[in-house]
Image (tube, rainbow, N blue to C red; front, top):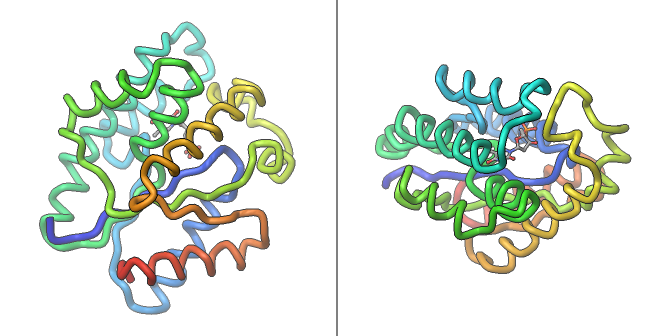
Length: 207
Ligand code: TMP
């Protein structure tokens, strides 16, 4: 694959959206061409799947159904956008990827990493990023910063224990994949965190 594929991960409220915005400002200012997308979503079909997953009315959704829907939204995004762009040599960023499924569904919902790896490898053959930026902030700190959960969002309503497990999952994934993961301390100011992200991308020769 000629292009580069970078993903962003982190618990709820770590400031991921703001950091992505700051990175985009930096890339534009420096004339670096890029494509940004998000999960679940990024294509018409995947955005429709996202609406089903995050709909607060869908409380009856089983963990397995949820994990399969995330994988379905992902494979559509890979085939429609990510893979063709990487083949053309583009720089592709994605807000969340399979590590979210491993941390949220595999670890926190208790489905296990093997289940998540299996369904995702059937769907897209283990297609992995060149670099994963993990914004490291505990869920307690993140929720304090965000000022409470968004009640319209089924996932955020899962409670602090759930988010603790998500966080533990991410730390495990970072330990297991030290070459792919770049762990960024997100406890400082947004400018400090942004500087660290840009430094990591430079260090890896991405920008
Ligand atoms: P967002 O808040 O970053 O837009 O992400 C949407 C929610 O979806 C967030 O709570 C994390 C969750 N999620 C999973 O549980 N599994 C996944 O595979 C992905 C991509 C997201």
